[in-house]
Image (cartoon, rainbow, N blue to C red; front, top):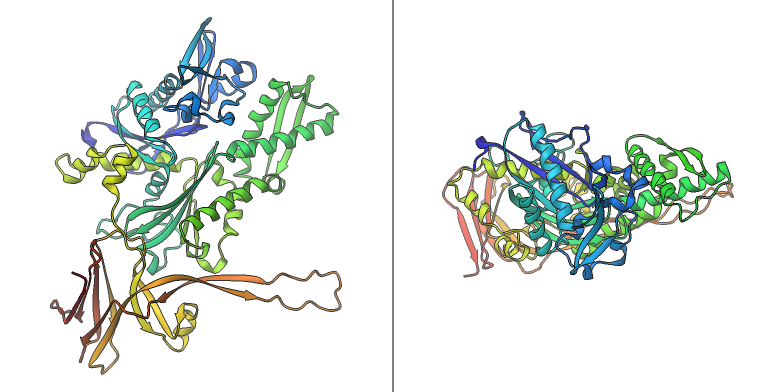
Length: 589
């Protein structure tokens, strides 16, 4: 199939909300609205007599028809009932039942008791998303789709997802991890027309990457979804990405933030009315939860938000408000735990926060300013760590999937790249075996004598033993790898020495003592010393290669460094614009 034969879509199938995206007439990815104008569609289905409610229309049914309303089913697909945790079985909607060790639901449809497996429900819901896409595209055939899944999903779950999509009439081109979708959405994996790498974290806008970070960066992808919090640390090396660490936390998510708002508004209701909402009053709690979620979403865009519920309890109405400052205090524990997960993921990647160049946000709750503020505290102001958030975090995954699907069908059928992509299995182990490449373990770079004057002040924190290490090929770079750089030649120099070595990444910690307090002001509390961290490299004393390059009369030397998968290192130097090598050295067989 080719792009001309029809359209392709990207689907973000979250456990709480789903969304669909396609490429518009301007070549950009857009999230599709359903017939009700909703771009975020609740992962929920409800049955009431002969009526079937899906998406956000099913949400009110949680209040008056919870036993026949099914949600939270996506993460159950492809798993056994005996594998499920107690918190996955606990819910305010239709109960999860065991049918031959398959998670299922018993509901009443048109007056008849019916048992639906999680697979059956997912087929129905994917059909809803597929139908919304077909309506939006006005008859243009949908020839394929790309779906995303969390990294923690098993091969059995991925296979079950593919099966459900097929049963819903949807052709799956590829199933990719959520962090990959996020990076694709920002174009961070897409080279420019001349093969150049993206120079801006937010597409073509915003502050560009520092020159030394265009090729090699350490990126953290934060996915704050409705039912979990996931952190992936990724090494970006000249457009190739590899996962360094992954942390999955099921104990916090968007619903945890709903919980703190529900508790807050319940107390406010009691203060105003002297009526306590009874624990067994399921309708009241469901009403309050639905409105609290709306309030939370509003707080992502405004400084305050209302929460109004008619006849909340004992016939009494409730109307309250909360500002962003109060909400951040209420959600403080959740934000702190989220930050701890990010810190843990960075630690597992054997990095420090000062060695992270970019944080990319995904998931509906990731756009809350309180979380962004909490994450920014992890990184020093002078570290230049960029928090990338210009795309709505609840749209980024679907948009990335649409771009990926469009890329696949844009490749000519006969091209080797297309054949390779189509040959890839979505089974994690097979996919990993095909896509995993050997990488460098340590950074390889150039050892220079420390500069003097103003230039020395700029790199003072990177100088070790009066030497400056400039990384050329970073650690975790897939090999074979090639890098080239140009050095100026000192006037009148008959030769130049090029020193290539491996290095050890280090973190320098400086303690800055606070200024002494004014003795006359007794109310001031003493300030704590401040720790400032900075990343640098300590080069090995033993060089890999030392190359003497004849440079008489030359203005510059271009050095090419090549590392092969067997560990061989080759250095070649050319003078000025000459095409012939002036000097060459090789390490290894």
